[in-house]
Length: 299
Image (spheres, rainbow, N blue to C red):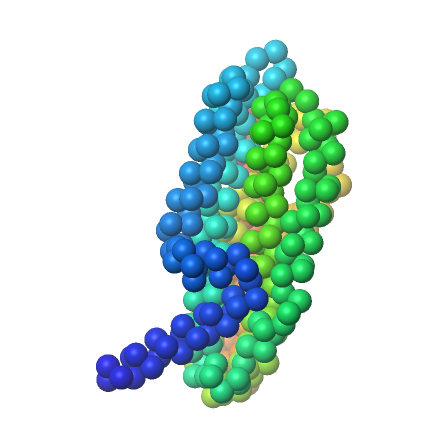
């Protein structure tokens, strides 16, 4: 029994390393530094405290005054840096092990190269790095010439801190999305087979594990929807695009990997109903958050 447990653990480690084998940042954090998801969350939170509390304290940007928005009153930034960013850091290092556990539940062996070819492509780093560079190129000119009266634009140090945060966040989110895409395509094919269908519950549990991060992203959208009329006079078209991307992305994130198993003949209708209810809850999070915040804080 102990030998079987150790063999399963080795298979899980092989799969985990294969999933992030083309990700230089994950190799640094997991293989060289050995950081856990709790350590990553604490590091993300520490950066949020440094950026929102310490730096504005040094440069006198904590308090709002005369049309100037200080960091202590910027609750949008506080939500992003105290909750969303640490959660994204934790999920980034957690995801490879979680994906590997689903493959194990399907009784598939990485050593036999039955699965996982998509994770070994040499193109892996290019999309996340392109997304990180793209968001900086898009955001930096606005920070320098458009935004004013805001603690993040107070000096070059706070501007560079924002751009570094955005670049890292977009790199991690792009990498997580890429891993999810490969997993979704493989699971969609594999779960059609009765032999691998034992992993359906594990895949469903994995999808629901993202509900916390999706809830934080939905709360961020809700806050932006409340703040936009005060900042720019109304809801902008790009906000509707963000909500649409959230809805489509969250549905695809959760449903596509399970589709192969759900469409197999003989599935219990109640299983499909539960998946539908879970999806409805995830998709409705931005609207529910918007309504709740409006009731709490008023118009």
